[in-house]
Image 1 (cartoon, rainbow, N blue to C red):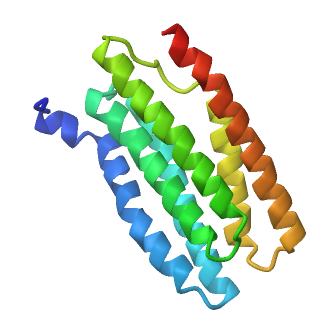
Image 2: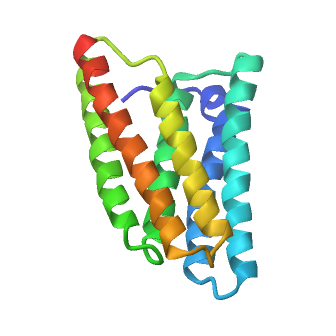
Length: 182
Protein backbone atom coordinates (compact mmCIF):
# COMPACT_ATOMS: atom_id res chain seq x y z
CA UNK A 1 0.00 0.00 0.00
CA UNK A 2 1.26 3.44 -0.90
CA UNK A 3 2.04 5.82 1.94
CA UNK A 4 0.54 9.29 1.57
CA UNK A 5 1.81 12.33 3.43
CA UNK A 6 -0.41 14.25 5.84
CA UNK A 7 -0.15 17.22 3.48
CA UNK A 8 -1.59 15.10 0.66
CA UNK A 9 -4.27 13.42 2.79
CA UNK A 10 -5.40 16.69 4.33
CA UNK A 11 -5.22 19.03 1.37
CA UNK A 12 -8.24 21.33 1.09
CA UNK A 13 -9.66 19.50 -1.96
CA UNK A 14 -9.31 16.13 -0.20
CA UNK A 15 -11.00 17.47 2.94
CA UNK A 16 -13.86 18.53 0.66
CA UNK A 17 -13.94 14.95 -0.67
CA UNK A 18 -14.21 13.58 2.88
CA UNK A 19 -17.01 16.07 3.52
CA UNK A 20 -18.86 14.74 0.48
CA UNK A 21 -18.53 11.19 1.80
CA UNK A 22 -19.95 12.33 5.15
CA UNK A 23 -22.90 13.96 3.36
CA UNK A 24 -23.98 10.59 1.91
CA UNK A 25 -25.55 9.15 5.10
CA UNK A 26 -26.95 12.59 5.96
CA UNK A 27 -28.71 12.74 2.59
CA UNK A 28 -29.95 9.14 2.87
CA UNK A 29 -31.36 9.67 6.37
CA UNK A 30 -33.17 12.85 5.37
CA UNK A 31 -34.50 11.49 2.06
CA UNK A 32 -35.61 8.09 3.36
CA UNK A 33 -37.42 9.68 6.31
CA UNK A 34 -38.92 12.58 4.33
CA UNK A 35 -42.63 13.12 4.89
CA UNK A 36 -43.19 16.65 3.61
CA UNK A 37 -42.06 18.70 0.63
CA UNK A 38 -39.85 20.64 3.04
CA UNK A 39 -38.03 17.42 3.96
CA UNK A 40 -37.36 16.74 0.27
CA UNK A 41 -36.14 20.32 -0.20
CA UNK A 42 -33.69 19.77 2.65
CA UNK A 43 -32.50 16.53 1.01
CA UNK A 44 -32.08 18.44 -2.28
CA UNK A 45 -30.11 21.14 -0.45
CA UNK A 46 -27.79 18.52 1.04
CA UNK A 47 -27.25 17.07 -2.43
CA UNK A 48 -26.71 20.57 -3.82
CA UNK A 49 -24.10 21.39 -1.16
CA UNK A 50 -22.33 18.11 -1.90
CA UNK A 51 -22.35 18.90 -5.63
CA UNK A 52 -21.02 22.43 -5.13
CA UNK A 53 -18.27 21.00 -2.94
CA UNK A 54 -17.46 18.55 -5.76
CA UNK A 55 -17.19 21.43 -8.22
CA UNK A 56 -14.98 23.53 -5.96
CA UNK A 57 -12.61 20.76 -4.88
CA UNK A 58 -11.52 20.29 -8.49
CA UNK A 59 -11.24 24.02 -9.15
CA UNK A 60 -9.19 24.57 -5.99
CA UNK A 61 -6.97 21.57 -6.72
CA UNK A 62 -6.16 22.87 -10.20
CA UNK A 63 -5.89 26.58 -9.38
CA UNK A 64 -3.66 26.14 -6.33
CA UNK A 65 -1.70 23.14 -7.62
CA UNK A 66 -3.17 20.83 -4.97
CA UNK A 67 -3.81 17.86 -7.27
CA UNK A 68 -2.74 14.71 -5.44
CA UNK A 69 -2.60 11.04 -6.38
CA UNK A 70 -4.90 10.28 -3.44
CA UNK A 71 -7.30 13.00 -4.59
CA UNK A 72 -7.42 11.39 -8.04
CA UNK A 73 -8.84 8.32 -6.28
CA UNK A 74 -10.94 10.09 -3.63
CA UNK A 75 -12.86 12.45 -5.92
CA UNK A 76 -14.31 9.85 -8.31
CA UNK A 77 -14.87 7.46 -5.37
CA UNK A 78 -16.94 10.11 -3.56
CA UNK A 79 -18.80 10.84 -6.83
CA UNK A 80 -19.73 7.21 -7.45
CA UNK A 81 -20.66 6.52 -3.83
CA UNK A 82 -22.89 9.60 -3.82
CA UNK A 83 -24.51 8.71 -7.13
CA UNK A 84 -25.07 5.10 -6.09
CA UNK A 85 -26.66 5.97 -2.75
CA UNK A 86 -28.86 8.69 -4.24
CA UNK A 87 -30.05 6.26 -6.93
CA UNK A 88 -30.81 3.60 -4.31
CA UNK A 89 -32.73 6.14 -2.24
CA UNK A 90 -34.70 7.29 -5.29
CA UNK A 91 -35.55 3.67 -6.14
CA UNK A 92 -37.76 3.60 -3.04
CA UNK A 93 -40.11 6.06 -4.79
CA UNK A 94 -39.40 5.31 -8.45
CA UNK A 95 -39.15 1.56 -9.17
CA UNK A 96 -37.83 2.13 -12.72
CA UNK A 97 -34.63 3.47 -11.16
CA UNK A 98 -33.68 -0.08 -10.21
CA UNK A 99 -32.84 -0.66 -13.88
CA UNK A 100 -30.64 2.42 -13.75
CA UNK A 101 -29.00 1.12 -10.56
CA UNK A 102 -28.19 -2.16 -12.33
CA UNK A 103 -26.78 -0.37 -15.39
CA UNK A 104 -24.81 2.00 -13.12
CA UNK A 105 -23.32 -0.99 -11.25
CA UNK A 106 -22.34 -2.76 -14.48
CA UNK A 107 -20.86 0.38 -16.09
CA UNK A 108 -18.92 1.48 -13.01
CA UNK A 109 -17.87 -2.10 -12.23
CA UNK A 110 -16.52 -2.49 -15.77
CA UNK A 111 -14.67 0.81 -15.54
CA UNK A 112 -13.18 -0.07 -12.15
CA UNK A 113 -12.01 -3.51 -13.29
CA UNK A 114 -10.61 -2.20 -16.58
CA UNK A 115 -9.00 0.72 -14.76
CA UNK A 116 -7.23 -1.69 -12.41
CA UNK A 117 -6.14 -3.95 -15.27
CA UNK A 118 -4.75 -1.01 -17.22
CA UNK A 119 -3.10 0.42 -14.09
CA UNK A 120 -1.22 -2.86 -13.62
CA UNK A 121 -0.06 -2.49 -17.23
CA UNK A 122 1.24 0.97 -16.35
CA UNK A 123 -1.56 2.80 -18.14
CA UNK A 124 -4.41 4.88 -16.83
CA UNK A 125 -7.35 6.83 -18.13
CA UNK A 126 -6.50 10.51 -17.90
CA UNK A 127 -9.80 11.84 -16.56
CA UNK A 128 -13.34 11.38 -17.75
CA UNK A 129 -14.20 11.52 -21.43
CA UNK A 130 -16.74 14.11 -22.66
CA UNK A 131 -19.49 11.50 -22.96
CA UNK A 132 -18.85 10.37 -19.38
CA UNK A 133 -19.19 13.98 -18.23
CA UNK A 134 -22.45 14.40 -20.18
CA UNK A 135 -23.79 11.18 -18.64
CA UNK A 136 -22.84 12.35 -15.15
CA UNK A 137 -24.44 15.76 -15.72
CA UNK A 138 -27.69 14.17 -16.95
CA UNK A 139 -27.67 11.76 -14.01
CA UNK A 140 -27.22 14.66 -11.58
CA UNK A 141 -30.01 16.71 -13.17
CA UNK A 142 -32.38 13.73 -13.16
CA UNK A 143 -31.63 12.91 -9.52
CA UNK A 144 -31.91 16.54 -8.42
CA UNK A 145 -35.24 17.03 -10.22
CA UNK A 146 -36.70 13.84 -8.71
CA UNK A 147 -35.59 14.90 -5.22
CA UNK A 148 -36.66 18.54 -5.52
CA UNK A 149 -40.08 17.76 -7.04
CA UNK A 150 -41.44 14.77 -5.08
CA UNK A 151 -44.92 15.24 -6.60
CA UNK A 152 -43.62 15.00 -10.20
CA UNK A 153 -45.83 12.89 -12.43
CA UNK A 154 -44.85 9.27 -12.91
CA UNK A 155 -44.71 9.77 -16.68
CA UNK A 156 -42.23 12.66 -16.44
CA UNK A 157 -40.18 10.78 -13.85
CA UNK A 158 -40.03 7.71 -16.09
CA UNK A 159 -39.05 9.79 -19.14
CA UNK A 160 -36.21 11.37 -17.14
CA UNK A 161 -35.10 7.96 -15.86
CA UNK A 162 -35.24 6.43 -19.36
CA UNK A 163 -33.28 9.33 -20.89
CA UNK A 164 -30.66 8.96 -18.20
CA UNK A 165 -30.54 5.19 -18.82
CA UNK A 166 -29.97 5.74 -22.53
CA UNK A 167 -27.19 8.24 -21.84
CA UNK A 168 -25.59 5.84 -19.36
CA UNK A 169 -25.79 2.92 -21.81
CA UNK A 170 -24.27 5.03 -24.61
CA UNK A 171 -21.50 6.22 -22.30
CA UNK A 172 -20.76 2.64 -21.26
CA UNK A 173 -20.58 1.46 -24.90
CA UNK A 174 -18.33 4.40 -25.83
CA UNK A 175 -15.93 3.67 -22.96
CA UNK A 176 -15.34 0.07 -24.11
CA UNK A 177 -13.14 0.99 -27.12
CA UNK A 178 -11.34 3.65 -25.02
CA UNK A 179 -10.12 0.92 -22.67
CA UNK A 180 -9.37 -1.47 -25.55
CA UNK A 181 -7.14 1.15 -27.26
CA UNK A 182 -5.15 1.84 -24.07
